Image (cartoon, rainbow over all chains, first blue to last red):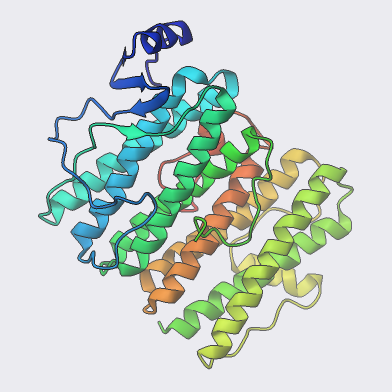
Length: 201
Length: 164
């Protein structure tokens, strides 16, 4: 379970231009919801995934590939943390559970990258998730971010050389797809639109 | 194990799942919503089977025969460790438990395939299908409970989560 601010707290902070939340710093600047990952002791490092959902072809090596997955996971953590104040009831319970999953993915990926002797990428200082004003806006953002993360894993899994790392990455990709199905249901959309989950690629 | 053998095994399991859904749709007095869901699941499994058969053909492998008749299906299910009775798929809970068992078996199979396949293109395909099976299981678990820890029980999907 994640400690969260009340909607009122969030909105008051937003009106002041900055809302300091437990374990996260979120700000509404110029009407744009920005989410940071906060709570990590890692120095922020610029990750290479400048385009969400895309791993550049030149990225290679298991540690570097897992770093791409880690960057996507940090983005998801920020998306869920930023969206919590606008969610209620079942959608909020879902988001809190899924946030815990994303944090578990971050922890596992950092552990794996460390085991490979690679440097763990830190979260960015902030992430731009557009202009959510309603819970539906947040759910649409979360659906998009889940989709982009699935796309990242589908690029990474076949390029990993270690079979056990492939399996771990695939098991995470499937959970992102499961999250996406639930979020789609909350939006009133078909949760099983296609027989092949491609991350939109 | 060769890629052709791995793909053939995945296709054989898809065929058992398709046939199992077929029996449930044929025999179960299902409410319309559950019937629509099982039809969608079966169609997506058929889509998987078609692509796997095509890949197997490309690899020079031979497609396994689908179970012909209820007796053959029963033997195939027993060999795969599928235990939910085919004649007890009536209620929402029955449908969920029956189908989650099938989807779990497939996810475990595809996860093994992701580890063992040598062709990266087939690894991608196995991951895409496994993700679809995970979505199936999620919707089915959602028939049993809205508690998110039941609907998506683990941050790592391996197909071995306890059936609620």
